[in-house]
Length: 269
Image 1: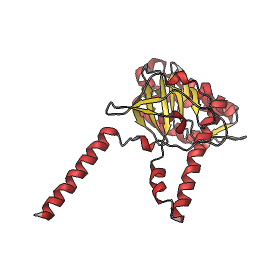
Image 2 (image 1 turned 45 degrees about the vertical axis):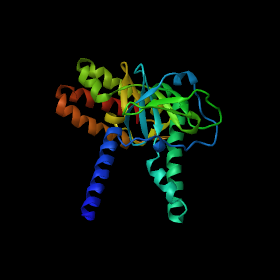
Image 3 (image 1 turned 120 degrees about the horizontal axis):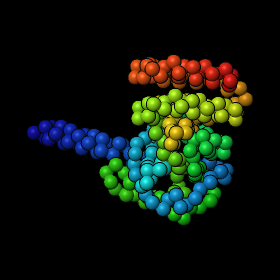
Image 4 (image 1 turned 135 degrees about the horizontal axis):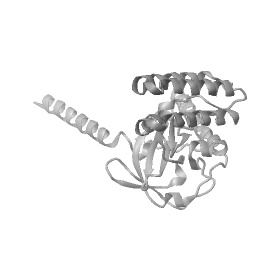
């Protein structure tokens, strides 16, 4: 009898936990990174925090929240694995892993700092908070997936604010007649970045690029680094992936996309 009750209790707790995780997308405030850069690099207008931001989703590096007017997104960097390693950091092996993960987060922050400095128009970045040298006196309010509003001290976390973009595939789907012009804007963006001597280790056209109006922007700024001779290899792989999707869904656009890519390569590399 006791064993049966314990089994029932176990599955009840497991079921409730699984249900809660689905409803919240596994997001909790404690999973937002508190890792900050040591040197002063932030550029922030507190008025951007006058209204709350609502949970939109998550990527590999950040949780994403959208402004009330739908014009901006706030990206707060994730530290889910770091949170676990904090508990185990007294053990030498895990202390090294914790340090390594902290450095990975800092590299992401440095990449966004580079993007804000060199590519603010090309990434849609309007503000960055990556250190705690200048205090922000306006609290950050975020609304989670359950509709609960949380008030946070923005000085304790790293985050950026960008113009909200429409993803590349969605833009082509809703505006197929102007798709060639949109793709030309995408390659123009890549050309500008390369001319500024910046490499991107993850130029995924489908996930990391979008459009603000009819202008292409790169919404993921977490893998940038300075490079005197950027490689064609990263972009070639991204091109192949998007080419497959275009071939399958918009075959009339296939030749135009390939021609634009070839012209871009001839001018850039």
